[in-house]
Image 1 (cartoon, rainbow, N blue to C red):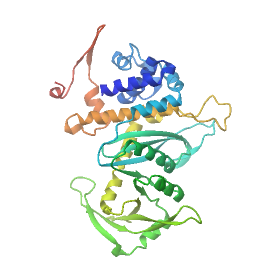
Image 2: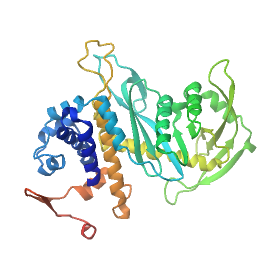
Image 3: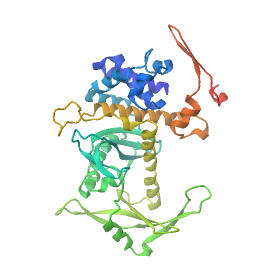
Image 4: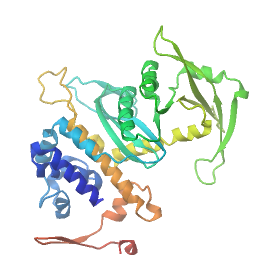
Length: 405
């Protein structure tokens, strides 16, 4: 974890010379350890007096809220983009790389500025917002890249852009992309993603619309194959699902040629009540077994779990706003993604660092949540001895002394 910290500091000093190399490094370390150790808001830095936290962020005292807030908005968008490129995690060298791309919506409760609206799934309504699009390696559970957009950003165009960058980083092997139903809201955008990324296998969830549902229910029963899957918990009865393969004609627009796509229709049999239906569009993979593809899509749930951790443990929803609060045009205040990108990206890197740290711990802590790691491994006393040449840290762990030794 300290190697990652040194790497971030060196990247910051090379990118943020405009605000001062050391100040840029302190900015990055402050935001990184803020997310790592669970400091909720920037204004809490005014009440931080811990010497150890100050030394971790590169000084004898913690930065004040005004200094930190001013620095995060002073760095340029180009410098933040360069920093993001330098600090991206190394893409897995596996033969098959499976990546999930999805959006996280950050609500903005302003009435003064008319910023674009987006659909907030938790609040189940369209509201003024900004969006964070992360790509996620479902095998290593690592956040790979980030794109920040206004609230009207759409998943399909952003995913097409991110897949192009991922293909450049992963030249060998097969790249599989998993997208949620937001990418299939428009057939034109969905087919554009498939055409622009002709080397990738795409698994896209089909929106649950009445017209689709009527077609699925009209399929004959002999088209379905039954599978038994493990229950929701240990010892639970097996869950039965029925899977059918068919073809669907998609058209980008009226007058455009029809494209035949392979969908997998899944009916989850309920013990009580109605069965649950859903389906997947499969592009460029006609050989893999249907149940294997369904399991690959379900691995996307780890991406959703990473978003929950970002929200509740790294406090990514406190990301600075992208619109300019000093704009004189209240109807079109503009959008600058420098502060939002830097803040959210460092929160993602902190989550990655905690995930890697959990892999080095005893087996019971593998994939543990950040608050569990903080409670068991971070929150215990230590003595600091600072000299002109070195810093000595004497730990007093409460548990797992043999591991520390």
